[in-house]
Structures are given as structure tokens and as C-alpha cells.
Image (cartoon, rainbow, N blue to C red; front, side, top):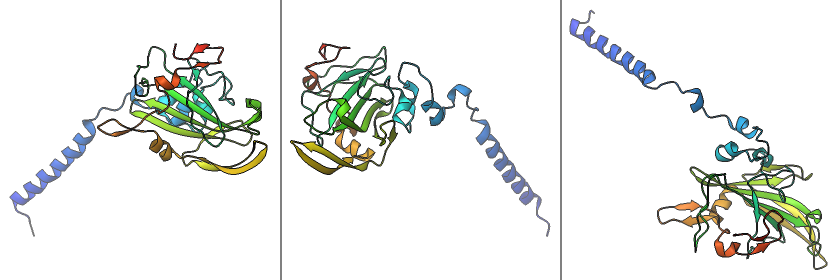
Amino acid sequence: MRLSVATQRSKWILSFAVFLLAACSGSNQDPPRKDDIPLPDTDLCSQNTGEEPNWNALQMADCPNLDNYNLFQNLSDPTAVPNNPGLRFDLATPLFSDYSVKYRFLWIPKGRKARYSEREVIEFPVGTVLAKTFTLPNDTAIPGIENERLIETRLLIHRPSGWVALPYRWNNSQSRAQLALAGGTIQVSLIHNGQQLDFNYVMPDRNQCKICHQWDSGNRIELTPLGPKARNLNLSINDDSHPGNQLL
């Protein structure tokens, strides 16, 4: 059966319209320029940044290993000598965490400044990195890193989208810390007051980090640092790189 001229014309118009839509949907978007194409995480994490932190990776990638960020001069020792412009800091009232010893460091990109807050946490600019490493002593009566075992390093990174938390777990050989988003349980044995204590050290997962570091801004619940308030930082520390009160 032959179609009428009107029917044939309608089908031709419909086919042509579909063709135009398909063509326009591709032509309205310019191809991305080379500078607009983000580097894969693997490339960002493997960048060699010399004696400075790997700022690009810190801002854009959840790297598989802590050493990918190049935060410390000795990549297997997160307890001393941060790469510039890193600084060690302590808190006046640290929380007890299963007899662990904590090593805290702060990096603020050059040219940026933190803003003082009288009551709340100091307002750190985008790019800031906070690192807290937990170690457990063989005997709590014998201080010193040589008597301690690396357990985990937690990072808080202020990215353009907000703060993110990344937990890293140190391996048995103490040579590398690997990303552990799911947290974990570590069997621990140590001496305290002359008695042996055996227990499970619980390393929080990423979501638990978010729960502990919540702050209600009035509009939404945000992830934020908790400890670095002025009153908690107002003390002197024994650090050759910054002797005296750490707020000055």
C-alpha cells in the first residue's frame, strides 16, 4: 500500500529532526583542552616534588600510600622532620587513646594564612594538611620513638570541596603506610605499670572519622578539625625548628 504524500513528508521531517538532534548534541560541546583533562590519580600520586609536599595529589587524589604525598623527609618516619613548610605542634589537653603516643604536624601552603578564632578551631585555608600519627610503646614507662611501634597516620586535608579524612595503616615492617578506608583491628601487647596488657587497637574507618569530626555550621554538618583551638595550642614545645610558644 502506497503512503500518501503528506505521510511520507511527515516521516521525512521526523527523521531529519532526529538527525539534527544527534548532531547538535555532539557539536555544542567543545572538545576538552589538554589543560582541562585531570591527571589520573596514579600520575598525581607518583609526582616527584623534591623537598616539598605533593600539593597536587593532596588536593585531588586519595593516594594508596602515605609516602605518595611526600610530607616527611624520611618517608618511613612520620614522627619527625616534615618537608617545608611543615611544623610540628602539640595540644595542651590531648585525648587518651589506648596508651598511644601522638605526633602532630601541620602544613599550610606558602602565601596562605590561617585565621584566628577566639572560641572555635583556627580557620585554616584551603590546601592545609593536618597529620596525626599514632604509635604504641613497648613499655609505657620507657619513652622514645625507638621504643614505639607505628600504628596509623590520619590525614585531614582541606580541599576546595571541604575537609576530607584519610586513614593510613602502617605495615608490620614499619616501612610504609597504606590507605585503609575500612579501618581495621590491630592486636597489641604492651607493658603498663609493670603488667602486660593485651587488647585490640581499633583503627576507625573513614566514616567514623567523619562522625568524630563533625561541626554544625548552622546550614549543614561539616567535617572539620577539632583540636587546634587557640587555647589548646597555647603552650611551649621542645622543638628546635620552633622553640618557645608554638602560637608565636
